[in-house]
Image (cartoon, rainbow, N blue to C red):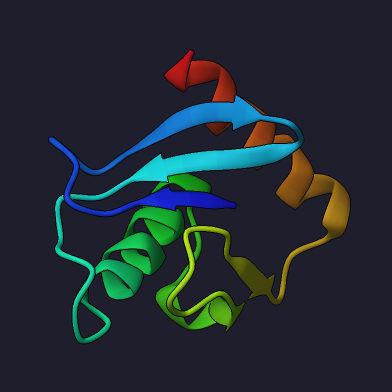
Length: 87
């Protein structure tokens, strides 16, 4: 995932080079942007916040998340839909 903090609104912005792009309004300080990204992902993927964990990229725009309690095919389908709706 490629994240942009300090954006105009919280949104999935599409896909680039195999990565989902997201933007959040929260500032990149004290974990605020990461928390906003987690909330956004939970909302657009229709998951509980507790199903998603940031595992890499805490201070980097490129982030890796662990998503639990969902089949890989279903997660991929939801990610494709979110990216397509953005574009």
